[in-house]
Image (cartoon, rainbow, N blue to C red; front, side, top):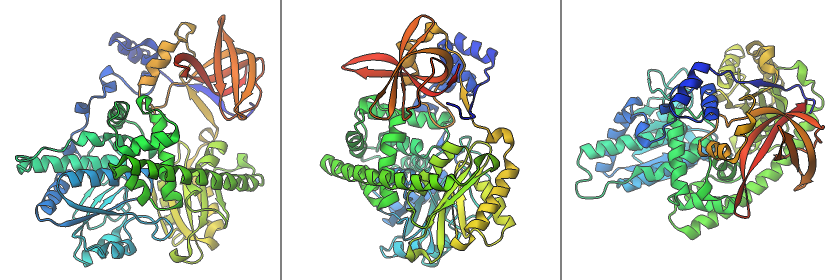
Length: 570
């Protein structure tokens, strides 16, 4: 495999490793955790009591009081959701919790193709038809200055719950809860939109308790919503810091125990997953894409209904529709990917610091996935653009971007906007992902400007692809016990699954399922089963491989299987 990928080993502090072993952690797990910044075993504790208190998140108490007042006055509330998995789960958490607290609550999902992103004046006009007294944004709103002003002009209050980075001006909302707003000292800046909404619901419950609202009725158990919080957190690919790991672990436990929402179980059923063995991988790669397919190709209202219904039959019916949409999304993406590779054939990637692609035939709902695929393949920050729909404005294109480590995508766009006034019509996002709108005629100008910014912000070392591993695994630890132990932990963005690196002899290799390689490897006198997924390039007799340990289940028996992520000739 002769691409220019270097295999590097994560540095580990021997002192931290020894301390973790003294605290009773398995020696390999101690090494892996020390390399990920864990310094004491307590940081791996995942009990719900370890969660940072809601009062630490700026304005949650104000939001709780605002919502409690609205419930007491019988005011009509409307959640304005976002059209991705984080937005859908955040909306479902809000609808379920507020209903349980006795609120008069509805929701509205902007259509990606008609309304664009966020609380726009157009969305406010649409919302106003159902005469709400209070609008609640989830996973959006921090940049909606005009939208909030439009709502206020109609006498509608706005509560913003979001986690995106704010612009220079904050909207004049009744309350803003966002860990990334100026002045918020909340230690976990990586909360997803659904995490922020869950925190607001915890604050509301605390406020209702204070007011004696549960004297005559049972208090709703908000922990029942943690499967939704886990799903949105993993699907939005936010870093799994301590607080997010607690939320995800607790949610996965509920799913494994059969206590998830009907919609979550229905999504597992259509995806062929096993809820009793649910992992963060399942949330990110089985459930997330099926929910996202609704927002990408159709209407996320379908996804939200799946997560809010208690009717098992209805949940399964919607999950099947979402599965069909996901198949359709994959077909569209496959065609776009082939066209993107044709465009890439004309580019000398080694001489560039970024990639910008546009095709008038591309589908706006799928450009984000395409940008991610191209970024993974070529290791460059990538934007892919598609035309806006006709009712969003003629001659406009919308781009979705994905970045590599070292380039903060939203900050890069901010710098470009300052250098090229009027070029970016709208933009927003995070470090790793961002979106923007511009005129089609300005695409080349954008591509040149973005290339200049990326070239300044990225060093040659950051543009060289490397694969980080946890080093060699002693042969004595190559066993099913360690694979199971690793399986029990929650891994994800910012807390990657352990990857080891060793030399093997290749004893056999054959193609299975048309696109995977099944391998027989030897090391230190042992024969090991291994898989190389989605790659058919034959391996030489001696390889140096970066690999994961996995538990393979076959006919009720569990066996150790290595998953080869990358190899080079030994």
